[in-house]
Image 1 (cartoon, rainbow, N blue to C red):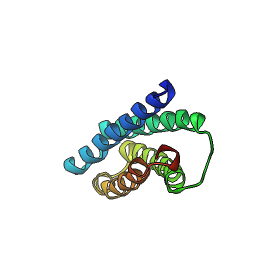
Image 2 (cartoon, rainbow, N blue to C red):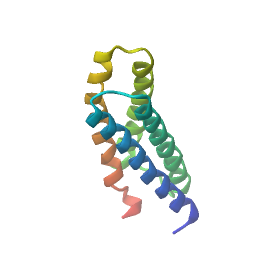
Image 3 (cartoon, rainbow, N blue to C red):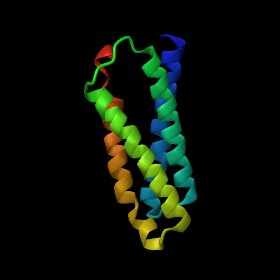
Image 4 (spheres, rainbow, N blue to C red):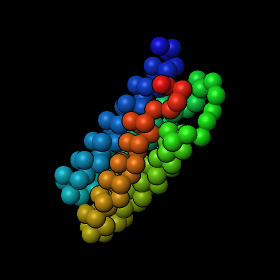
Length: 122
């Protein structure tokens, strides 16, 4: 495996770990804490860098399920991290408690490109 591909794979898997810790930590705590927000941002950063590395390695670009859902997932993760940051800093206790419903949706959506490989990987 090429070094860039390995780095991308490691980073995207790190994104899964960080994002999962943030989402499930928040879910089980039933409240949004600063540490959860840190894990959201770490997951987004790892995913964005890993995806960028994979993008530079791609020989042909296609708009398959992996590419489209992956792009949407990164956008949802960005919106989620920004929203989490705002809710954690200045949101009400009720907003912090109810925030996890959106977190689970973003996490589940993110799993689509993670587990549905691009045609180039098959």
